[in-house]
Length: 316
Ligand code: UD2
Image 1 (cartoon, rainbow, N blue to C red):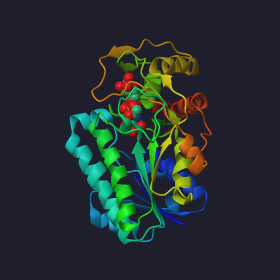
Image 2: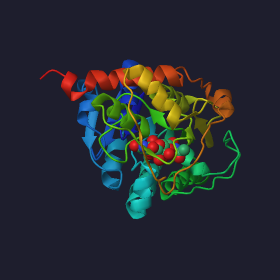
Image 3: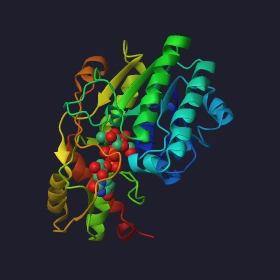
């Protein structure tokens, strides 16, 4: 089978591409390298087709799509606070870009589009765990754009018969998540802080909780969602069903690193949700999804990866 992975040089994308290549599939990657890195594809570079370009350019998207059976659409402007700062840019990439991907998928008669949706769609509703039958009430522009992406994907199903599956990721973390931007995921930021022995910055009191999900689980979900029967037109939570607080994560990193660092507490960020926890029953039922790597093991693997890839530990 031939897959187009948008955002395939990014964190979740490159991990997905590695697995597709390992399974012997043909892969085209479309990535503008705004946050992704060609280095992330180093191990598979000779086996894939890499196209540098943006999903906001419909001609490029059409070209990338020509031979695709399945599209795994991961390219996006991530980060809640970045969307609060610049909602127009987030909308241009996440909404206009997603629409381009769907139009090209329709025109090229792809079998199915899998869309990276987000738990941020739920907003700050107090009910936990979050299940797919709850009404989304996003509290950040980012959450809106991810929810609109779902609505578009599902509308393309109803309107043009384009098969689609939306996966609401819950805080994916793991190797290759870039720690270098202020908008990076918290676990990459915390891991880098521990490696550099600088104080980790906590926004808020650190008692907010997240269903941190190791990237390998998202990769499995992405691939299975392409072919799972009766899944088209649906949205699924992809999490673990367990949540931890940031303060607890810091304790675990102290253990993993053997270092005691005082965290720096700063005011909460706009658009931040207090608690997030996935109900994953629907994904189990329709995708046979089972989180294979739970949080503690994922965190250990991730910390070990950052350690091995830290500039001072990489030869040359
Ligand atoms: C949201 C989505 C997630 C994904 C992601 C993409 C939710 C619940 N999750 O993640 O599924 O779509 O957006 O960007 O909406 N924090 C610190 N220190 C730091 C960095 C972050 O304390 O250095 C805090 C941050 O304020 C938040 C928590 O850590 O309370 C998680 O932040 P994040 O940016 O890793 O992810 P989040 O939850 O915005």
